[in-house]
Length: 192
Image (tube, rainbow, N blue to C red; front, side, top):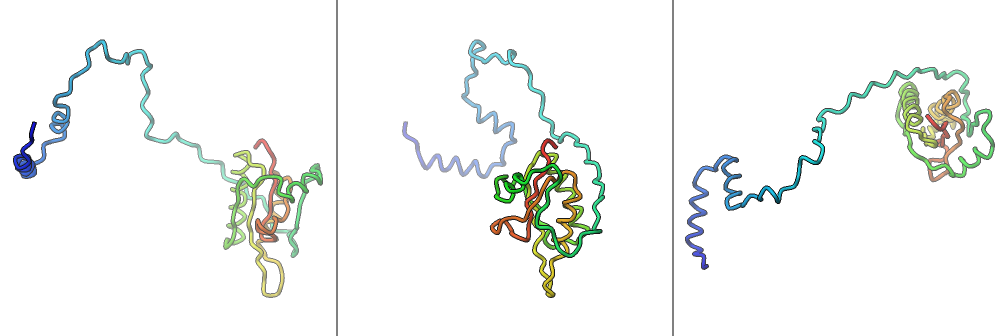
């Protein structure tokens, strides 16, 4: 069958000039010439259980309980701790933490936050980490060198706060490639 290209172009031009048919009409035109399957050739849809429609609204998640801020700045001193180990934790565990034998599963960067904001973020971070069963996290507080050569306030306070958190088993300064004196690796209780 030979197609007259000029006639086809004229038809297309006429179709462009006519208003577009509604979607239902377009659908009928698309199905023109389709032959329905005989009833014996259809899939048995009644054998599979009906699917419940997917919820378009996310399940209501209860708001987490507010975090009690029980951390104190008192007793932090001027010199930050380089490591901490809760009573009952072996020196071998601290050594493994220092050597990087616990993979870092999450981190928190506190650069640029005020002391109050950093304390709240730290508490939230530790709660979330223990709820998700994380064992080792990194808290980046920065070195905070002062012009007088002293240590930064946030560095000292973060390390002091960590000693007050029951979920913290141990911490040590991060290796130089993971932040050095500006970060601590924190070992958390398991099974949170």
